[in-house]
Amino acid sequence: MDQSELKKVAAERAAEFVEDGMTIGLGTGSTVFFLVEAIARRIQAEGLHIQAVATSSRTADQATGLGIKMLDLNEVDHIDLTIDGADEIDAHYQGIKGGGAAHTLEKMVAINSHRNIWIVDESKLVQVLGKFPLPTEVIPFGCERVFQRLEAEGLHPHFRLDADGKRVLTHNKNYVIDLHMGAIKHPHLLAHFLDSQSGILEHGLFLDLVNTIVVGTQDGAKVIKAR
Image (cartoon, rainbow, N blue to C red; front, side, top):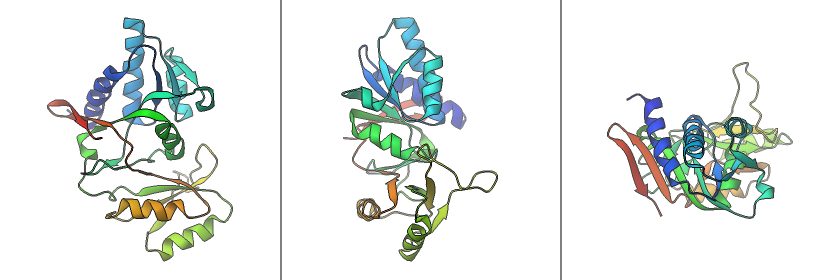
């Protein structure tokens, strides 16, 4: 199976965790695309009654088009389960997310969920985080000063650019500064530092959040209980 097929295997297995009556969180990305399709098929085949909160307009539009009832995070009093992708997961089940520049919304939904499932293909499993650049969402005001602070700390920042060479804008109309560190040996310490920096709205370290990981492998879906 190629990478796309592995993502589909993980997504379809994760869709089995959705139960009737749930309020679910739907993440963002190519693996979640397969998830939304799988959930929609279950709704049609089994008559499931669920409602969902999306972490991006892209996911919300797809889900709405497939007949899934969508709500804003402000409209729900709880989320039973959020299923999302991840860009890297280390040996301690800590993760990096934000390749799609939606990590702020993804984290807001995740921390308001009773349970979190990550769906990935096996290439996303690593020993140490950091080969995938760590995203930070930075407000435009004073962003150059934020960049300089990150650079001074040896975090190798780069503004994320689109195909036209313009700075990528998030859903919140902010910039993304990616940290090209190679290896993040102490993710909790780095998260604490980034949390303390004025001008950084959110970063892509998702620590101590995931409960279950569903991995698409050549032998099928593997379910890992993380915490």
